[in-house]
Image (cartoon, rainbow, N blue to C red; front, side, top):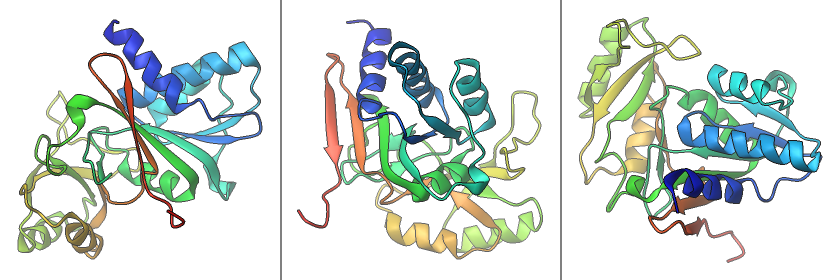
Length: 234
């Protein structure tokens, strides 16, 4: 099975539970884009009547170009399902996001969603915990930048401000900077997430501790492994 076909199987699995009448959250990034494409194909083939909200301007543009009904999230109370990718996951279902700089909007969508499904290739599954293979993105305000970085250093976080290919500061869709930070492989991630949340200049970060309900892992042989968060009844 080719890599393209495998990615399509992953995306098709992620959107399998979507039915007419749902409002669907569309994540940001390349893997999320596969889900958007697969969803648009189902809408075309099956005549699904759904509405979508997007985590980034790029995801919104892609959805619209494929014929999906994109609506304004500002007046929407909740979402039925969010489909998204991830930079890294571990088997405790902690997810790391932010390579596209959309983690603030993605977290808002997570919290508004009844269910969340994340898609990853098995190469993005951490052996121990997230943050070892790739840096932790932290969205910060330009206002008070030096003070915020000092506060981050006090909790052991150092990093570099992300730049684009032209050497200019990368800005999120909300106009924030992104600091890509290095963390230890034995970091207490829930504690770190709370410490980051307490720093006023930190807008958000890429640690999604318990937002994932389901993680779909694309295996080398084309099969899909499913991780589900236990419910309170289990």
